[in-house]
Length: 225
Image (cartoon, rainbow, N blue to C red; front, top):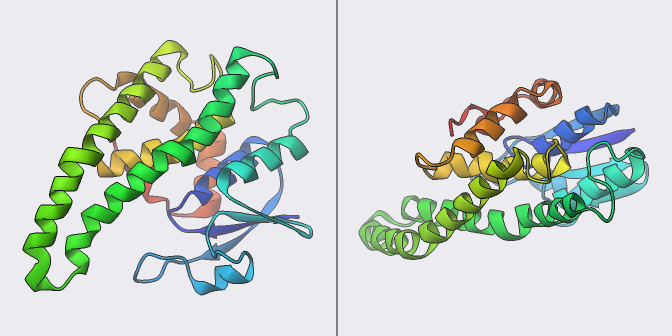
């Protein structure tokens, strides 16, 4: 039996969604964040880094969202229903977005979150200085880069509605967290109709809704684009 080690309001939602799309049976072991919003130490009993998502499949322990998605597709999706055929332009796009989601998009969004939170986590007498520094970093460095990435998402989705061609794929599952978490932290502006249309489409999928029911509250699904 596949077991998903599920941390609330995390990337782990994507794994439940993928499993629902594949119509695979699974169990969920739930973990709650501490007051510092970090995963509990008990996750380290599953994987040394104590991060989520992690899945176990028999004796196998697999961490990292992209690696988990690749494993599940390789092992349980023999018809390649959720990824384009090998050797096609769509497959190259699929591979790109599969890795881009965590390799390029998420580091910027995590930095944005960290710099936004810094003023609240330092002693009150240095908060004015910390606020000036973090505002400067966000305004001069992070926000322009994030805006470039959002424009890139918009252009790609405007081509044919999905991230890896003209049909839904696991690349859209992987990109859901950067887009939904990004919308929670930044304003997409007026020129993002394709992103909004895509977000509406993924949220209406029965498997997405089934994952929400199985996993429980997921803050980002309520975020408007």
